[in-house]
Picture 1: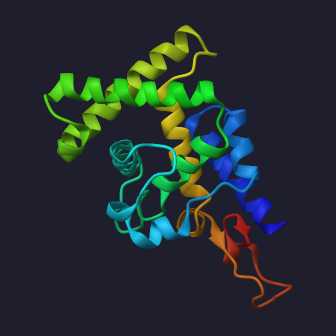
Picture 2: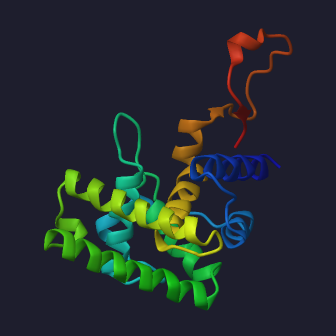
Amino acid sequence: MNNFINRRNAIKKTALLMGYAVSVSAISGIFSGCKADPKAIAGGLENWTPAFLSKSEGQLIAQIAESILPKTDTPGAIDAGVYSFIDIILKDNTETEDQIFFKNGLSDFVTSCQEAFGKSFLECDKKEKIEVLKNEEALAIEKRNANSNEKTFWFTMKELTLLGFFTSELGSKQFLKYDEIPGNYDACIPLDDVGGCWHSL
């Protein structure tokens, strides 16, 4: 039950940040228990071998996700293993048509970056990466405004990044109040002392 609540809160948080409802396929993956492979996180990004994506595609989505949720004084997307989550949900919870759509979108992303800076996204500096992502966001918004039902690679990538992060142990502890169970029980405490939305893992 606690895990269900955690995943439900993750979906709500993602929808709030995205500004629209999370896709049915993503919700299906979340509630079927899709999560990053702990071994992939423990072994580190450089030693990770994707199950669905190619090695180069896996490294690329990891860097895109990290640019969306960078490590600062708190963990980022790579720390949370978002790259593994995206790979697994694409492999196990995504229809073939949508798998092809994602891979084609990733390929177009590579081309756009190459055309803009004459180099790959991985070779871009932080400022250039941000510019690439801003351009992707603007184009995706333009497409969505023209047709609200049109899928875009950018919003799919952004959605999976946020879901992967918020359903990870690091992400859920970082952005939601964390109360370990079993733990101390106090039946009468002032609301001001608690604050926020509490959940249990």
